[in-house]
Length: 415
Ligand SMILES: [Zn+2]
Image 1: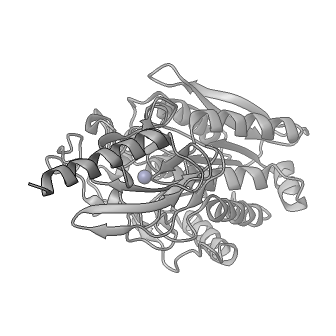
Image 2: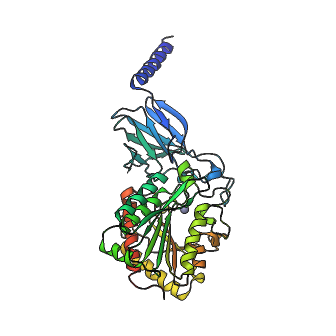
Image 3: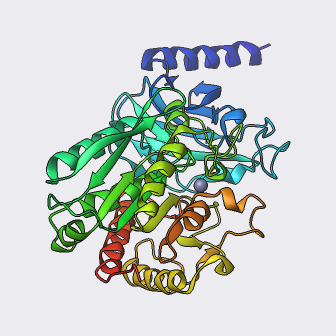
């Protein structure tokens, strides 16, 4: 008879203890946030979540939440389990739940102020659950799949760079289907010239791939900088940068990839569903008609097992000789510049008919089919599951991309 009261006493003490320290709670009522709470434990402090995205709006791999009610020095364990709902969008994964690796990075992103992001220590995977241990610096902790970059961040980035860089402008690419503005940046020197080669850089056709926006940010910051190589490039080229393409899924914390009715990167047809794709196509067609579209770079994040950035190129058979020469030169320059911490893989890959029957509806393949023969169109996949996949690591990779572009356009590529 003594065991029961003792257990009860211990439980009561645990309850009183947690009450004295305050209850922890989870918030997801802000831009880009996403999580479904499975359970909360107060002693020890543990929160178990699953990604909160709707599978109809893309792969449920993204999660981003704030935990309140902590005290400085508290240790919290965040446990992430995959959503068990089957995927419903187009693609070969339809009908199956998304594999756990997509929502369980080796290291999560953590912030103590909601602004500056670092990586956690490596998580521990056991029986399908990934656990990340973090220590609170104050009453709140922000945790995410990777460093978040939201539509608000995109607007602030393009506006601040436009203010700093003479002759450039922030503009609205379009209103998304959900009625949200899609921020973009045009970098060009004040000296007018109609025949400038056009460079188009875009990120985040897949909303969960937040790292691609950080690479884009690094590229934009360098291309808009006072560095003489960047200034010289702006004298001779016109550069458009779109840090987030799928504005709606990013704002609502959905994954975006293979969303209904159409993945953003399979939407590059004559009748696109997504407003951002239609608007980008309009600008790119105009450059193509003026024979000045020179370079198109689409920024993505790859699979959990890809530990180095790499390029996807158009199938060799679709390239002209001038296009192949320029592509080889661009890749060589990128290999020279992208030397770490996220070092470019030696070999590019190809996304053609063997990769996806809808390969022609992928951005770079559509661009290549509509651009002048000398143009280069590529996808850069930036590894996200490494210790260097941080805001600094991604930005450095973007800066190196900018430097490779500056070298590429030092010569006239329109031959
Ligand atoms: Zn992608």
